[in-house]
Length: 113
Ligand code: 5GP
Ligand code: ZN
Figure 1 (cartoon, helix red, strand yellow):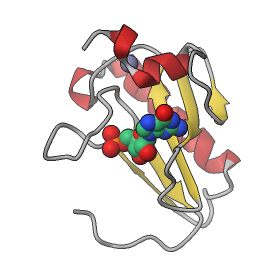
Figure 2 (figure 1 turned 90 degrees about the vertical axis):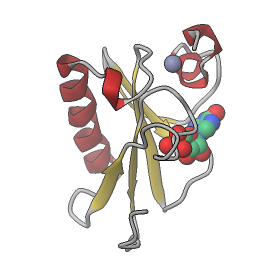
Figure 3 (figure 1 turned 45 degrees about the vertical axis):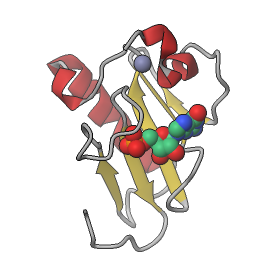
């Protein structure tokens, strides 16, 4: 995919508005437009990569550190939360730009698939 056509690249560039909850040099996090829990943020690298399989070591560290920062700033680090990345068709990935969902603020289902 051409990153110019990527919705999360457009959000990272500020071309599409989003409700940002975290930002650093490499990573952006914003609220999911269709939240599936009281807290539902998406943590994305600013650089386009399709999914976890394309993620380099430095980006992996930056994204996971941002997941922790979002969990803390959203107030779910003590109560608990889920961080998940969907990968490819069977993983139900609908946006082909790496993102981690951070879900919490309520008891989540134990069902994972
Ligand atoms: P996936 O299914 O790829 O794991 O997750 C994609 C997520 O992106 C979905 O939860 C969907 O609601 C969210 N999403 C799709 N388009 C937008 C958008 O334009 N803005 C925001 N904030 N979230 C979006
Ligand atoms: Zn992208």
